[in-house]
Length: 309
Length: 297
Image 1 (cartoon, rainbow over the protein chains, first blue to last red):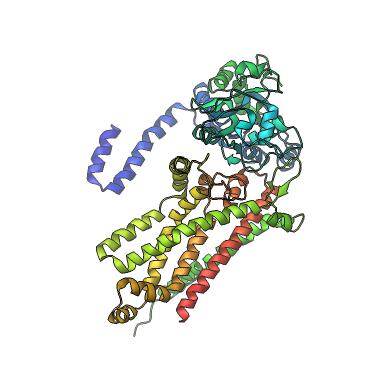
Image 2: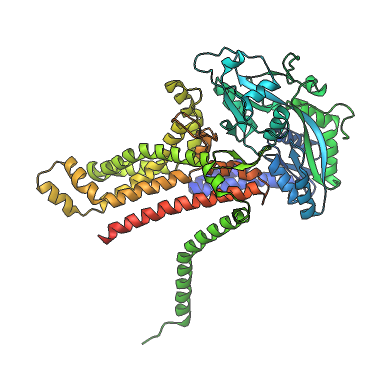
């Protein structure tokens, strides 16, 4: 019926007015069905933060719309810091973060809102080291990563690591993240330990996906990003704790057994004890259904019984 | 004689006030913006800020674990190198196009060209960045055999394309402002059209053309999204156009979102904002003074 009306109205009025009418008509059926089916008030859960987790959070939100039609989870990215900043100001219900909240950040949250950030582990992410398809390297040690990335590290060519690259791609193109992302902070600490910094001169991408995409286009590149961002155009390296150790691939099994050396928990934070719909959502995220989505989006679900931290 | 009704007198006064407010509002906004940017950065600017490190250290470690370092030399070098290259490309093209549009082409061509050039100015900067990332990057890698194509050259070409429309439209205005008597006198002396342009019009319009170039510079310095995507975003003092760099604007854009509000890092990003504001202010002021020089003559 809507289509018929739209057609006739388009014929009568000019194109600009027609477009307007079209927009109004298009919005009408949605408005009607919404008010008919759902409860009069739809609860909205604001969920912001980690760029690493944004795909996962989105998948959860979409699935949860089927589980609890009265609740709508609104997901946005921006980075762990963005999520935590929003938590400090009390403008989100749940903040996603791929790093833990720093004590001074918790302090600010307490001061602003009078509530304590409460941490929930919702899954794990193996931080994968990506290289281009043209690169024959199979595995790498943490020490080698430090030689490439650390301030004072002196490896700048693939040949120095005994890797023979196609012509013109011998120079290592370091791809990193902007220095206040959660992924950057975790990579720095996991590879270099505390108190050290990464070498300047890396290409600092703004998102997890951008890192993988640039690696796929750059033969000499190396980069790090969440395992969920793997594509067929890049290769993930096996990583060993030190030379001589077995190198492990970033898989679900190796992350759960803690043999893969650079894996981290994925966290969600609420302000104070969650209640009502927020608590129901977090419980669902921890349920087998929610954890199945963790695996489906390429991350590592919590081990059975590991929901409580 | 009929006097005007009271409401008409009042409404006229009201409209006058509104128009005056519109005029003044621009000044208010500029000062307001400067005030707020300054206020956000002021806390650190007057306590703990080390201008020597800020301007002369290439080490930008806003979240450093060993030591936090706020040196923007490399970022300034990035901005300057990309802008300089962009101008080296855009000025000849822009002035050339302005001369062609204003002096050499017929009226129909002129309209078409002007519209197309203005269309170039209407392309959003993120689209330019996208072109830099997906088209120019592989092209530069292929042509020059460099390991990565996100560098000064890439950013410079993109910025040049973005500045050309400004240079053309302002440059064309400057040439148009040269009185026709100059042209007539020159042609009457038997010079060719090229000699007329080269010896008469360009010297006569040089202030306006310089202003066009400076406004192009202002555009290039302030551009953010396109350079963020096209230059590689690398803290590095470039030694060739094939090096990746990072600009002041891109740094603010990429780091402000995740810097905790009112932290030192946040305030330093606002100090970079003050620096950028100062640079563009000086460039625009110079352009303005130069144009005023034209009028006085």
